[in-house]
Length: 307
Length: 332
Image (cartoon, rainbow over all chains, first blue to last red):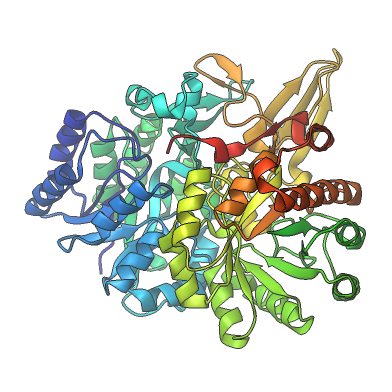
């Protein structure tokens, strides 16, 4: 089967109208699967549950497969209730981002998808979750193609694999809000400062190296993970879905680039420079090659061209 | 309330036993545990000798097998489980569902505790591990507030253990990849955060000391300023043109003042962090926590953390600071 393209949930906090406008565009794009929902912070309430469902139906109507994603760090009982509400609707498949959601879904006999914060590092873990109803899983962002190869070799039948190929990398979650901290505000009076940072808040070293990106309670890489040079390998490894992390600018062009390279309508080098310019702090791909995530490990473009 | 203390080696194990621990936790000498540091941990002979010493003194021994097994090395995790079973240790502390599945299938009577590295922060998640693998206890991540610990404890299918003292992870454990982003090695895959072999200490001509992790500048200290280990999340960075501890100050968690509340909400065990620390640290922290728990049990109503305890603990704390961590958060 042809590899499909998916769009991860928007990890940043955008005003409702900006978000709805964005998905109007996404509806017309080449993306196959759209993940929806607030996955970072339960204080971000520009979109209510009903708004997400309305949006999901709109995208479904335009031919997209829609998946609802649960929050990643579930602490308060109010957050448990919200997670439960997503898991207990039957119209859309759910992406579980915490084992709590896996428990609810498997107890209800619903098949589900796991996001990349669910720790699956070996075959045995994959088998257990498959028995519980796992139908697609996301490779942990810190694992690379060697580990994936081993996991794909004995993958259970009818299980799909998804790999993140574009975007700032989700790295850590905390009870503390680093955006509020950057503004000297307590988390309970954060004044929704993350609305000011449509691509997160850059954290540099004291040598001005663009290192991490603060997104409320989440920490991301500053560099953008880009695996567009690896799409042939993805095919060889029987990866089913390639995941793009949305950003405030150029997401549509990024989707287009991946779609055209995937369908062999264009070569990688046709888009490479443009993609590079879409990454706010530069590119990386180290994890995929078994190195430090921030490394740029793929062979230089010239060698790709002459290969 | 059980006091669970760290033992990176045999002298630390004895120090914990001698000073009043109810249980000690150890790791084996490989990447199957989250303190995979050179010179630390137990081979079979040392483990047996430690186990005998603990048993003679009525103290339990747990094995932390709490990293994530990769397909290529899965046998190492199986062997660690086999070893813990053969040694007849009292419990295994596990994080990986694949490893849990192996342990409970092969040894149905083995007592399993859920490691903090499994990142279970809510009752539904705990229900999953209990239903699937019959875990008997769960160690809760340090991101939960006291109120949230209470909500989890009330609705959990198993008793909960919380961290009482030691270095503080501000990120939810098991879901932090900052270390592998910078170095290629994370607690999940390699059993160490900000590993020592990637650390550089560079003294400049002007007396300034720079600490780096895989060449990334983590912090810079003026002459005379106390320098700390470059744990990635505890450095000073620049955000919006300000230089500050953008993620977390170097500080230790200290819950002595909360003991009565922890007891009241049904916390079954209090854990001390620090298998990488010295036997002297283990002795001192164990002794103080033993005193404190005993005092609290005698008279929870009038219990107060003594200044002397707090001062002694301050001396062995990261950056000579302590905090109540997330426990004191009034907010969500």
